[in-house]
Length: 569
Image (cartoon, rainbow, N blue to C red; front, side, top):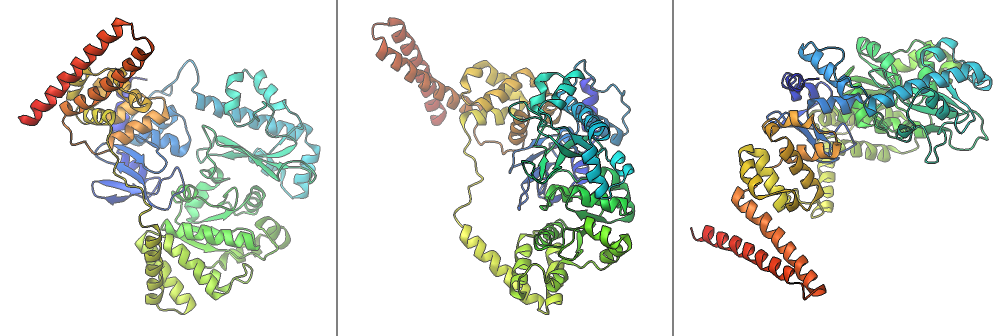
């Protein structure tokens, strides 16, 4: 696709508008900040620059332009992200956008997961008698199996591998799919397979449940992180329920696959599963695009209730509304509906309680009033949003019969104590500019300086790999230095993209370009001088080495004279 069309898509999609449609942004000075959607963090280190139209997380290091954000957040390919943003900006593009004779790696992995889903489903129908019996015993209907493409992994070390090879999949890419062990064996064997879809509908991972109790391995084997899947960034079932969630303006969050399937079958089509008990910030952010009202429907035992409380605290911290449904301690959503029916589950949902009230009334977790308040104070301490914190303070005070002043005072005291404990342990954010970094920062902020630098500095002056890569990109794309977001789209390597983004958002060094060039040259010449001296020790009769040494000393002397002149005048 023509680069000018890509540039137009970037220009017509303001990065603040796009990112704020996925996660809440808070204006700080000339930039916007948020908790990073790509990793769990307590403090906001994700920065969006409206002026430069780029983003950067100073926690995990991810950075880029509006296209890379949509790619990473939705786990879709570059062409898909372009199509999405083009449609958003009202730009008409050909459907062959970004088409290549060879599929991109990410597109190919999506294709492999699509083939694998069909393979596992076929195995279940044709060879999975025991697996089908298990699903029938759990009252999972045939239409549910078909709709969610449940499957079965054969007890084979190479069944899936051979099937993919027969479908013209290149063997070299298999190791990057997460479907095989380091010994190249099938990862999933003799397990019921649950395909995990992204919110855009593509299969990105699998959960495999063991069929027999005496089977080796854990109860579940789950896909590892791959180019298309990051654990904690997806919600099971969301693709099929997001429209109902948006229409009803609330969502039920359960823990596992069968809980979700039971809820869905029973008419609760506004449900999702968090794929485990630890709800992540990323999952909350994704769900917040469809509703601000969340119901936690985890298992009724102590560990399930504790997990629901932790999740509720995180949800409140995101500025959303949350209630907790307290199932009996021997039940999960699946067993409760099977034993009591859908209407009884609806009654339980209707009786859901806000966090503070739920904790106050709870008799399963096993903590006294003081312990419950301690849990709530810990949650309050982690909430940064002032409005969300104020609302929870009011809720705690009213529920436990305390004054709001007493609750607020407790939190202030807790924060002072934490600050005292961590005083002196924080790493300074001020980075000492190296010679290489200074040169690059000066060029990035004024591409007109490039010609002056290029006349005197080549790649050999850059001893740090990351800065050498960036300088090489500058050499190759100097015409794009005035449009960093467009340049980012031309860089394939993620680490290099992240590095360029970080540099673009950094402060300009106080040095002049002449001082930076002199500093870089001086360092290079002194290193070369040490190398020549070492060579002379090994070969003291080599006159060429002495000639090189004298030439180098003359160069160093020239630089020193320049420095003296600059100081005098």
